[in-house]
Length: 162
Image 1 (cartoon, rainbow, N blue to C red):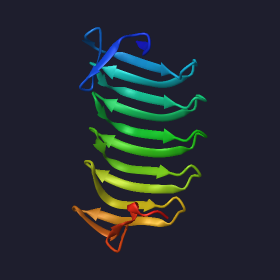
Image 2 (image 1 turned 120 degrees about the horizontal axis):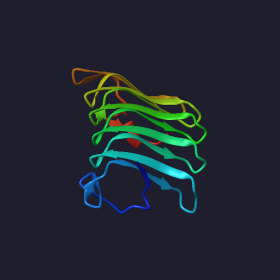
Image 3 (image 1 turned 90 degrees about the vertical axis):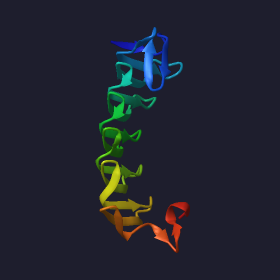
């Protein structure tokens, strides 16, 4: 069952959603203020985040799609710019990053291409500035990093502005 979140009295306590004192099973949707346009849709099972969650721009274009399995992030999470182009793609398993994660600028430039295993960086890691210049390019193997780590003169380049 799907309900307008403004039409039912739900409460959240320690990550569990309740309606009338019972763990909620179903979906809730929210509308943009003074509009009939959908802002977001969230699904729950036994009060926990479960299934697909969607968020929309005021124009109705899909902004992001995320998945949960009994309260934990799971599967492919995708974000979109207002023009429909992909902003990010993350893969998660049991609430931690697993596999490849990528992010792009609004003009389509890839700015992040990283790999994870059990929530930790593993394998090739590449990060670029918005202008396309390389920020970091290294391999993470057995807990050690090899390559361009994104630091310069012992100062992390993430703290600098270009």
